[in-house]
Structure formats: structure tokens, C-alpha cells
Length: 180
Image (tube, rainbow, N blue to C red; front, side, top):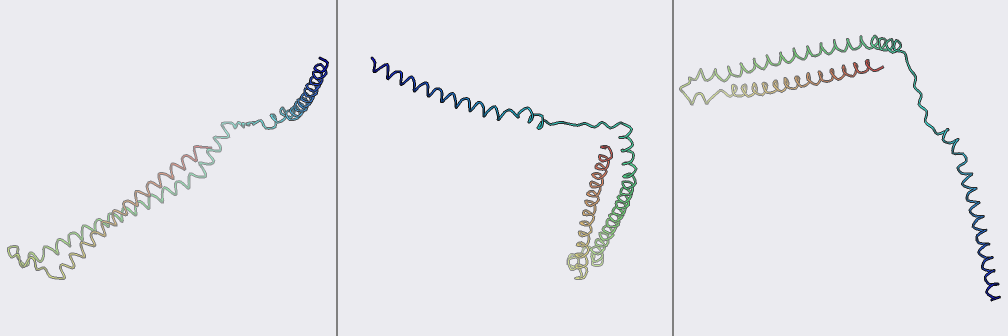
């Protein structure tokens, strides 16, 4: 038994030494953690988000809005006048193109009808033998008519585009004047 008690006390001694070593590591870890988190309250204050709100009195806002309106108002009026003048010019141009197209259409019909009247409606051979220059002229007038119709359509689309741009600018200007 003596050997077991001596062997047992040696193993108890080893266990106690291992326990003391673990305790020392644990104390070191607690100390390290304590040093690591000791600055947290200060960091919370440093990193805290602070929102500042500055209140502006209503009369100041109204004065700023009136000032902005006074600055932008004449420019908007000028832009509107320019846009109206441009739209009027384009509309006049479109109506002139339409009138020219109708005139060309009338000329084309006259060019086709004149040889038929000269040849006589009952004589089919003569109706089919239009003068070469009359055919060329009719073809040229037809092409001219198509070109004019295309120009009218393009100008109408351009007017619509300009109107959209103007509306957008007015909305943006109105939004800019409404928000201080």
C-alpha cells in the first residue's frame, strides 16, 4: 500500500500542479480580456452617431423661396417665350409644307389628267402612251410629295419632342422652386 499511497500522492501532486498551471492561464486570460474591454465605454461614446437638426424659422424659408422665385422666374418666362416662338415657327413650317404638298398633289393630278384629256378617254392606247417627260414629271412630283410628307411627319415629331422637353424643364423648375 505504501507504494500506492506514494504513487497516489505523486499523481495528486501532478494534478494539483496542472490545476495551478490552468488557474494561472485562466487568470492571465481574464486579465487580457479585462484590458481589451476596459475601453469599451469610451469607444461607445466616440462611435455613437449624433444627429443634429437645425430648425429654420418659417419666415426665413419663405424669404428664401421668394428670392429663388425672383431669380428663376424671369429665366423661366424667357424660356417659355422662346419655346412658344419656336413652336409657332415649326407649326408655320408644317402648315407651309402641308400646303406645298397639296399644291404638288394637285399638279401631279393635273399632269396625269392632261394627257388623258388630250388623248381622249375612249382611246386606251393613247391613254397608256403618256409623254416620257410627263411620266418623269409625275414620278418626280410623287417623290417630292412623299419627301414633303416625311418632312411634315418629322417636324410634327420634333414639335412633340420639344413640347415634352419643355414640360420636363418646367416640372423640374417648379420642383426646384418648391423645395428650399
